[in-house]
Image (tube, one colour):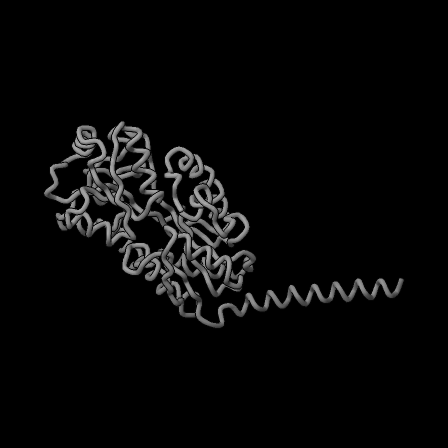
Length: 324
């Protein structure tokens, strides 16, 4: 009996030491730079925003945040790599967009979004819309639809990838209006803008990376996809206002490998939450008419699980099934 008691006490002592060790590690975190893996090419709006947030969050965290670009898989390569290869110690984090939730519905992926990630928190959401070059004969969204109806499959548009949220939403729009469009995928925001400027495509469906070109008069914004009109471009109608019952954006946030200490998660998100509200970031948000998506770890995880269900229904109806 005494031997059993000693064994029990020893096990309890060992468990207590382990808990204290984890608590000490969380208190000491971070003791070295943190790496933020960005799932996009350098230079686009997602990259620009995340780099800015990393720089602004670093003083609040107490260590530099080093940025590493790992594009591919329409934003899923970096999260997959972090889930598979990084320790859950808080020193490697990445971005989660809806692509991470969408791709498992279309192909075999190496991650399980429910099991392989720690959800750190939400950051913001993009403004989506359709633009054409300013000298385009398509002056309004009604012109866009009329041209597509008169010329089936001839109206070309670009997005940053086949089966991206932008591509799938354009397919939903086409189905709702009875038109047929021709999709020309690109590798990111810069290529989308260049394709429209160069006359290689007639339109771009994208996040507000087109904002500077709209402001300069080089692009015309035909329609936005939010629930309400844009504050920056209040004369531009929403899809709902032109008779298409679709609202779409891409909220995003931060994730890390599964198993991160909640205290470490709180420290990371606390630093980024402060960065989100700093004037320099709010100025960038206003420039591109973006919205905050401020969700703590539990709420961000809950949102992701619910959003995956909605996305699955869209994919089953509109995605191209020959993706490899």
